[in-house]
Length: 295
Image 1: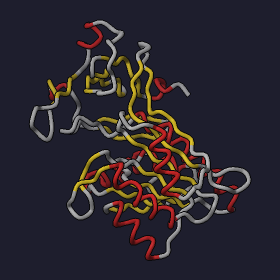
Image 2: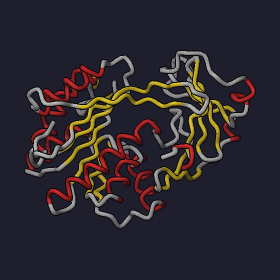
Image 3: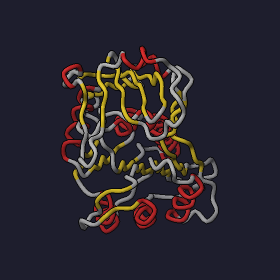
Image 4: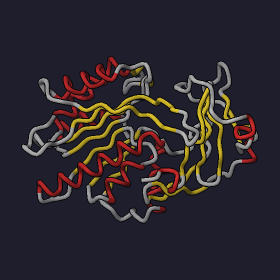
């Protein structure tokens, strides 16, 4: 699929910045993984409607000029309509590097339904504004969409309406991922697939600090107890560009008890129309295989 044809295009990246087109809106945003010089000239970068800058010592930054960006606009991605908005954190409601993992999960859900003879039940943790949830629902899965931020869940529900998927079997849940998984284990609930996009650093369920390398293992152990059977699939993404893919794969393998089973790693990387390459982290994928064993 031509990603530029359905609304999003990475135009260029370099010197810690990325130039992106979201429909008709062109934005200049920070990109820690863009270490090389940009490929396009100053005129291309100056054509951005607005530039986001982080403020030293402040929890958020700002857009300049803010008036040049619509308060909200719509973007079609993989046939799903999303509402975009400029946020104080520099996000707009769509992570383009996630679309490959979301597509993979939807394909896994379809394969699971064929094997099981019923719709796949999928848990989406840290689900944000819901692209993966909507692609899964469109593929026929029943989805539990979990995010700790009420505004993100409200945004995701609005996206479901825009995408014509509001009537699909989606549970919209405002909850901490770890606490939700623990309660689901106690309830005896099971899922055929799980997606999770945990932060590198953040707040834990008890107000303490969340650190990916320290806390991902216990979360995965809980997820292991939720998987309905040996044909379950799991996708874990991490935006820490310094995290080695073999370490992420090892955490997934150990947490799920795969005992040396094969876990696929994919770089979350985008290639700009200018030819520049932007590294955004890694994904570790454990999918179902033909003989019914997880890998």
